Length: 263
Image 1 (cartoon, helix red, strand yellow):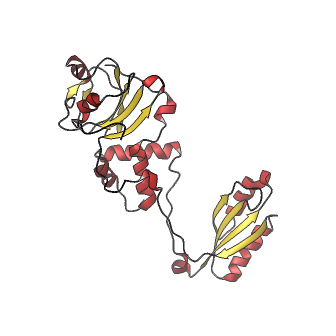
Image 2 (tube, one colour):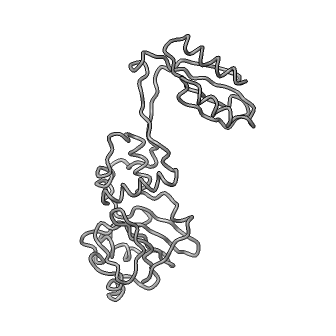
Image 3 (cartoon, rainbow, N blue to C red):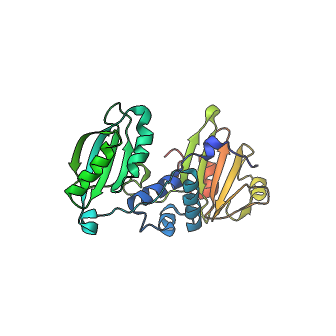
């Protein structure tokens, strides 16, 4: 059993841990802590914090924004404008509109016309008119506008827990060409490989030569394993198997023969 460095197209994938982090942060970033997510996924809080940092560095998580009730905050009105600008100018116009005081959101839409969606906040109707006039002065045509009564947000459900969710040891699975497979799982406390070095696990025949241990993610570190690397309970390990990851291999790390990597 030896180590393998995966190409970037595989390491850049969002696995189950990444997806669950995104789901919870979309639902309530303010009141969601790393330990809360870690408890659900049976990994350490440091692992969650490390994953969040990586998602931010990659630009997957681009920021955190407060959802404000502008009527309560300033007694103001929220307005939605649907605008049109020539497609070659769309990005530049969007940046210009964003700089107008009272504009809080600009979306570039992939359409020929009505290709800018703008949300504005004004203290009263005169203020909303002032904002609309500033947009028109940029040469942008306003094709429609509506006062916003209420907005509703929902996290992306495919990234969330299923109904009746229970923690699973297998967190991600990838099938490659030629029957090869990559699987990511959490090492159980009572697993046969737990508290053994990579060399010991190999010497005891727990894992065959066709299975490679790619990475060990522990706390806030991603380790490239060698023969003397210790496999600990709670580690998030990534395995590569040329002929597919069998249930026996999964059992070595999870001690759960009922678990199936294709579930």
